[in-house]
Length: 164
Figure 1 (cartoon, rainbow, N blue to C red):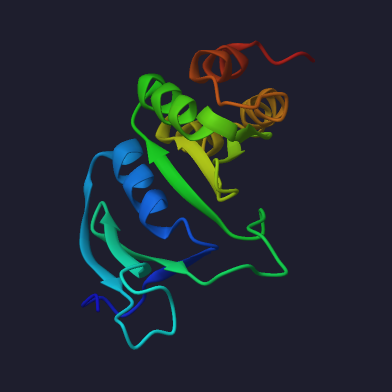
Figure 2: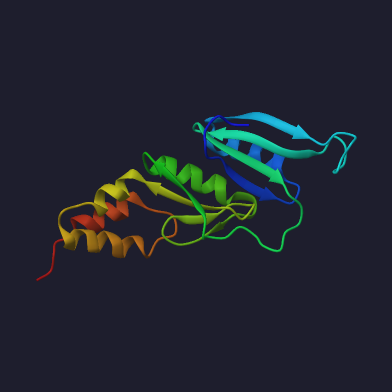
């Protein structure tokens, strides 16, 4: 098991290994640390995956093949990814919405497995921390119209003159 105290466990029907491989391909900075398979003693199909332990940027995850469930992933739990620039936002957005992923609002999306992600550029947080409340309001208003965050559009909103 991972050495960190808290590990995020993601429950899949039977796609745990494919999901772990997918997330490693999307983020690049990660590794699979363990794959556990059922033995002849069961209870699952011998050789099939029980769970996969993996890391993304040093953060431990477990992808569990828990079988069919009466629930699915939703936005009540999401993973926030802080991006350095627009290129990183664009890259992650394209990868995570590909092959069945869905765009949402304000930098949120759902990947092909239904997991929710917030793809957030550092610049957005900087603009929202501006001491001028009118500038923050303009940036917030612009952000609320977006699906994928557009840094140049946010900066343009921040530069607009305040109307009396």
